[in-house]
Length: 172
Image (cartoon, rainbow, N blue to C red; front, side, top):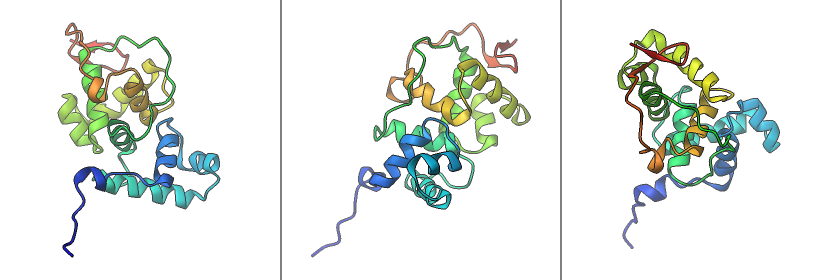
């Protein structure tokens, strides 16, 4: 009998335990909080996060937002509850949000978002505050809930501003 090679979709299917972890992860919880919610050891929760990352080729400790984006874009979990009012993000802020969702490393986020690497974290922090998110992982979950990322992420973007700044406005 020939060996059956699974297709890419089969390789990224989450196990039931990974799906439970992903459902909690999209809300922006820490490993300790997630483990407590799911009544498992923190190391078990972290192990499932690592497995999710490997399935979507996201390695390293960084990349929680990218893991959230991958599981939400795959349609395997639902986005977290989000306020009905979507903040008015500038083009630069939306570019930063997308870069954060799609790239686990700061230098890649900076390159794609067209911001200095040293400014990525302060600008992400400002974007988290503007969105009312708990952290950058939750921000990506909210981005999906609002239809700003994934298949529905093609909403019109205002071109009035090009780059984000620490106050949530735009650099001119």
